[in-house]
Image 1 (cartoon, rainbow, N blue to C red):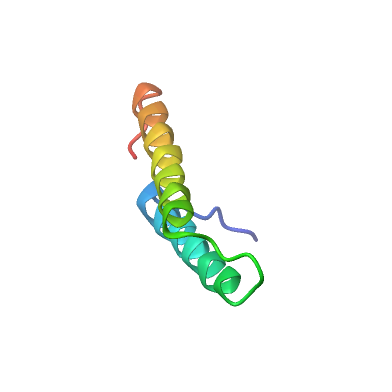
Image 2 (tube, helix red, strand yellow):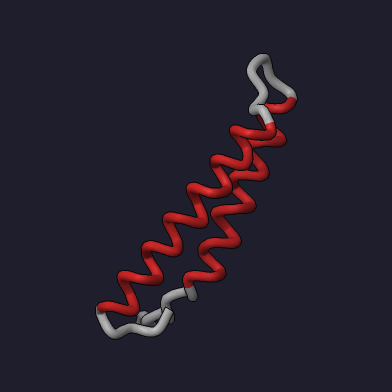
Length: 65
């Protein structure tokens, strides 16, 4: 019998997304076209904005973030 897994909190998902950005930054640093610090910070800001929007949407729908 399959059990229903609890959805992960947005904060955990955000940390995972930031870790993926950091891993991509490290991967690209060894390649021909590494990210600049500004590009890295833009990617981090984009992830924060995406999860902030998701948290606002959940709040408006009456769900806990």
